[in-house]
Image 1 (cartoon, rainbow, N blue to C red):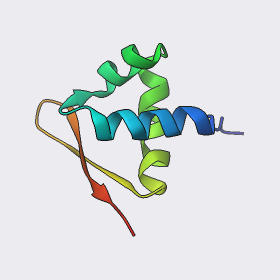
Image 2: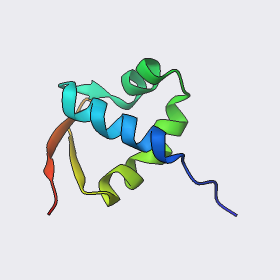
Image 3: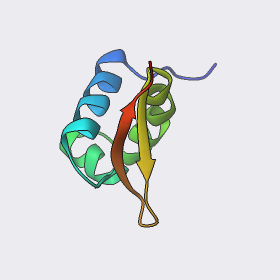
Length: 68
């Protein structure tokens, strides 16, 4: 059975991705004190909640918008 990322972590990632500009998944992980793999695993869930992220050629994430 696949592990489910905690809802509070997903909320925190979504909030930080909106507040920070050009932050990497590793940067988010550092800010949250979790492994980068945890953030990488949570990103699809963040987008499933309607928070759209764009990734540049250097792996930096930026808030793209909110799906309605």
